[in-house]
Length: 477
Ligand SMILES: [Zn+2]
Image 1 (cartoon, rainbow, N blue to C red):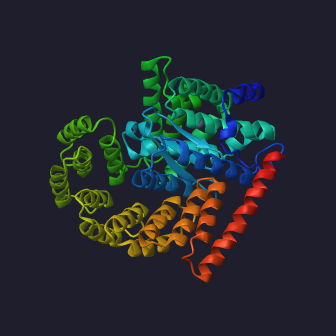
Image 2: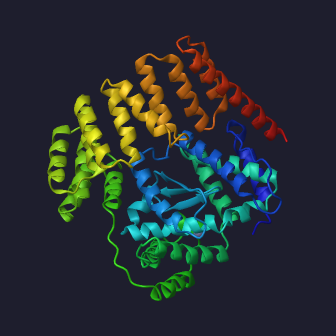
Image 3: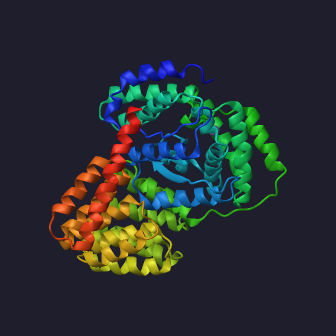
């Protein structure tokens, strides 16, 4: 199946201005199979481009954190628990999920909304995780030459970028080409069967309901029949056969039956996605009818409050949310929305108070860290924002959201050197070394840093310049 891609890639490379994108640094690529380190580097560069340039990347820390929690729960009990995984969400109504090189797994919002239980959703993640732990991607791409790999990686980025381009014809071409690439690089039947088998074992070890897997895949297949040639995107890249579903069912029948209750976060994340979809007025109607169907579900009330908030109906949103909060167990989703409503009312003090209390109740919730820092900046407490973000950075040095908040807080404090030093890290993490270097140069000229700070800026500047030289040299090889 890997015989023809080079010609295809060449023709595609001509169709896209690939030089506009940063090409991955491949380092030493093994002749037969991509090394895990090289695979991770390629993945890192692709994901930084997606987060930076793809308009459909869902920049929602709450939903992203939920998907990561489920994904890491599975990865921790997989047959290769030492691998790094990162899960991200793409705002796209089609049913799809995909694994990039290096353990980066993307999930379309459509898939999360189509899953009827958390176990169904987890089953797709389990299948994708298995493609990574079984090193299927490395085996597929490792057979290519290094130059073909480079082209493929840059092309992937070009395709993703074109999707968010306003030029519809280019986006349509890109979509067609993406389909062609995916079918060229599609997993083989044996890879699919292996991912099903391994994914199912992971699903069971993580404590999910294993019936979720054949159940969800069967529904996907039914959807395929309904739309005939318009199969869900997921099934085009992971071709599903009746035999595969029968295999899953046989395995599930020999496993212990387990009743599993969905976590509240499953419903909260779906409610948030629905409340934020389409026009605000339609979302309010959608969430009103959802609440009428499931009046006892706190997530339904939360979803309506969020839709009302989006429509600018702040008083109704606040009332609805307080009604939910009076009955529901404590939830970071509810507290974050309370703070957002307070901020929209220019009441920074309340927003900060709400989020500080929520942080004490949910100390491991990262989305709250961002929300609190943002509230402190908007509420006129930039020094408190700096202190909180710096503590969080101790364990999350490669989190661009934290560096961005730090840069904003320093800007409000009038600390120019510190502001640009933090902004440099944002650009570095988004894959743009020249922009990072420029920020450090501004920082070193700003004139308000002490000796210690300026030495740190100079050291970082030398380090990033050296890295840029190495990157450029690797690309010429
Ligand atoms: Zn698959």
